[in-house]
Each structure stands twice: as C-alpha cells, then as structure tokens.
Length: 414
Image (cartoon, rainbow, N blue to C red; front, side, top):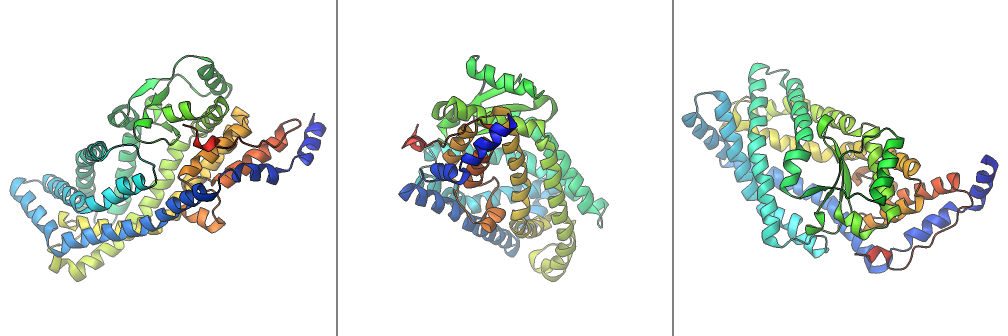
C-alpha cells in the first residue's frame, strides 16, 4: 500500500491542484477580497491612534480627574471610587469612539457586502456589547487598582494573575450566558451528518454531546465554527451558514478542524500564551506610566499610578503596546490554527472539502499574501497555504488522487 500511495503522490501535481482552486477567485472578486483585508491593516493603526487621541482628550480636559472626584463624593472606599471612575471612562470613551465604530463596524462592512443587519439592529448589538463591558470592565479595573495600591512595584505581576482569572471565568461563562445574547443556539439535528461528526469525534475520544448550531445568518453570510468554553461549558458550535452554504464534505472537514482545537487543548494554552503577552505589556506600563505621570500628571490632575484618574494613562500606553504586539497575538492563534488544520485533515479525510471551505473564507481574507504579510497580519493560515496543505495531504494519503476543478460559481453559493 505504501508503494502504491508513493507512486500516486509522484504522479499528482500538488501545485497544479492548488492552482486549480486558487484560480477560481479572479477579477473583481479577488480585488474586493484583497482590498477589504488590506484595509484592515490600516484599521489597526488608525484604531490605535483614535484610542490614543480619546485618552489624551480625557486627560487634557481633566475628565478623568472629574470622574475620580465624583467617585470620591459618592463613595468612601477606594474600590467604589475606582469602579465609578472606570465606568464613566468607558461610557465617555464609547461615545467619543462611536463615529469610528460606525465606520468600521457598520459602514465599511456594508460597503463590502459583509453585513446583513440594518443600522438599528447593528446598533442594538453594539449596545448589548457595551452593556456587558460596563458590567465587567469597571470591576476588573477596580480590582487591578486595588492590587496597584497594595503592591506598587509588583502590581503588574499580580495584575496579570487577576487578568488571567477573569479571562478563564469569562471564557467558561461566555458560551452559556454571553453568546446567547447575540444568537440563538440549538442542538444540531439528528441525522447522517451529525452521526458522521459524532463518529469522527468518538474516534479521537472527543466528547460530542454538545454540538450546537447558531443563527449567524441574520448578521452575515460568512461560514464559521468554533470551540468555546472551559470544563463543563465547553462546546462545539457551527453557524447556520456553514450548514446551508456548503457541502457535507466541507462541513465534516471544518468540524474535524474544530475537534482538533478541543483535542489539542488550544483553548487553555492560547489563553495562557496570550496572558504572557499581556503580562509583558503590564510590566512595560508599570515602568513607563510613572515616568509619564511625573512629567504630565500635574497638568492632567493625576497624582500617581494608583490614582484612578490614571486609567487613561495606562490605557494609552497599553493601546500602543497592543498595536506593536499584533504579530505576537496573531502568531499565537495562527500556529494553533495550523495544528488544527493538520488534525482536521487526518480526522475528516476530506482534503477537497477543506480546500473548498478555505476558499470560501476568501470572501473576507486575502487569498495569497506575502510571507511577511501573513506573519504580521494573519490570525489564520492564508487560503493559499490551507489549500496547498490539503492537496499535499491528498497526494500523501489518497490512492490515485485526481486534480479537482471546482465548478464555476461555487464560491457564490448561498
């Protein structure tokens, strides 16, 4: 059998098979996909600049000081003062950032035909997201500032721990309490397709009791699936677009990829690795913030780092750090996506299904980036790399593999 597969692989042109897929996206569709994704590079920069500008305005006009002073009139304890300061900061920041949010989240998405919600429905979802932030955010900030007051030199380390606890708790609760605020989740219907997914999961000792479908078609037509939660809340979810727009082979291939995330423990390891990057950012802020406050604090009405009025100072510095750390965050995710791709191909054994699914993501991801471009900006492997990996797996594992020419217009299927 090995000799037969080796002979088949030698006669199968991986590059030609890859090109057969990639060439199905040409002309205006390719240009639109590239323009949308490349525009996102600038959004990272401009989004950071706008965030820094908002923080500077809040400091320049002493709004943070006013928030703190109001908190001191309403609360006697430091925790309450910080909580109210953070709450008002988040509200004012959201209002000042609203034009940018409308442009990036609504107008631009509509321009590229990637959003199906009307403005009212879109704004409603934004308000839900803001409400969640206003419930959770001020509590996290108040706890971190309590840590700063108790450990002024090592607060960044303890603050990283606090952040990790909240990330874990939110990650565990989000599938049950937060995600249903935006979409309806229902158990996947019984039938041959679910049976095939369950059998694939059981072959790798992956629990498949909770497979959910959510109605993301009301927001957009992108295909998607994910593994979310920790411990008792962990679940595998796929959106209705994946069920309605793709073939069984594509669905099984995508679900094999998601099973890979579960089997390889990516949820926990990704959280820990990203927490390390966040910890580095807090460490740098712990060095830079006191120096910045020493120079400008009197003008802003900020006493020191432990002063709740310093929230915009820390936010400004973290915004710059997170922009510079974009490649770090992206590579953490992309490495795990590569691992899940490899697992999914072995689990599902649907190389052409995975290649077609990867091509569908070209609706909003640049298909053939340069190596440096992919390294810096891509959270997932590019479509080109995913299709080539699929075709290489096909050459190595399928007896008598053939080059498949996707039908014309299959990327337009609704």
